[in-house]
Length: 320
Ligand code: NAP
Image 1 (spheres, rainbow, N blue to C red):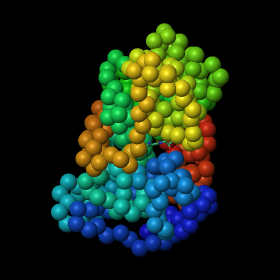
Image 2: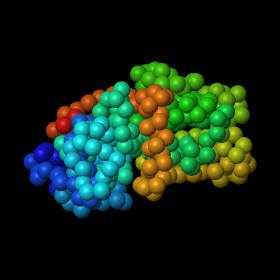
Image 3: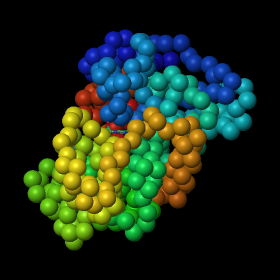
């Protein structure tokens, strides 16, 4: 089979398509014939060698794949050959024609959901779910600012928060992104490139502030987020690309909280619980992953450039 191999950390050009041996499942494992692969910003940090988690070289990137079951190992009773599935991490890497997986971290893909949409599930939707419900303890009736709503995690957070009965304000940086965020359920959409967007965000709550802010770019926004929190409001840091300065008085006066999360910290049991809820959301169509761009697997390097550019529109996926 063909797989993207990284033999040295570096720029997007280190992603090379190679011929590698076919995979065989061990006990409790299965092999997925990959039809689509989710490209996540973290894949680029790992490839560049700047992320705390460094795989042993050479490695095949990626955690999020969708496809059909090709073969199952001993003891696997949950899936059979040809079942449609998506993965919540893989053992061998997702940027490939086949992926070896722990059967406990593979989930069924409903018939009406495309493989590309399946590949958009794990990192984006599980992160949004964990940020909203495990970390911020979101409740129906609360008001949430999804700060960076046009990308993979943001669209997932908008759909999940709407389905749970929150009042949702989302931000994006392009007209196309703003239209998407509105179409996916935000009650109001703001432009995070406007210098007055914090004032507009506060005005959108009639001056009360936000119960929850899901933050995709904390180094830019965290300091000012604290000034638009409601009493007992909480910010959940999901994305960060630098350092931030805050005035702690802004959270003191509100009994507020700064929370943070990394999906890597979710236990297998938590992941199973989260994905059970996500599969239900796919089935009842409250969750509808948006695919903005598809690249052939061989063009993974172009996808890595694209995922770091502004003007996000849902997910970028690779197609083997
Ligand atoms: P993505 O699809 O590339 O989307 C990036 C988002 O950030 C877009 O909505 C973009 O909006 C927005 N953004 C750009 N400038 C912004 C600003 N000044 N203020 C607020 N938002 C801004 O990436 P993603 O997959 O959604 O991930 C978002 C971030 O979370 C990334 O940094 C990623 O590494 C991180 N992440 C963390 C975890 C975790 O476990 N903690 C898990 C997944 C992702 P426009 O392009 O419209 O300007």
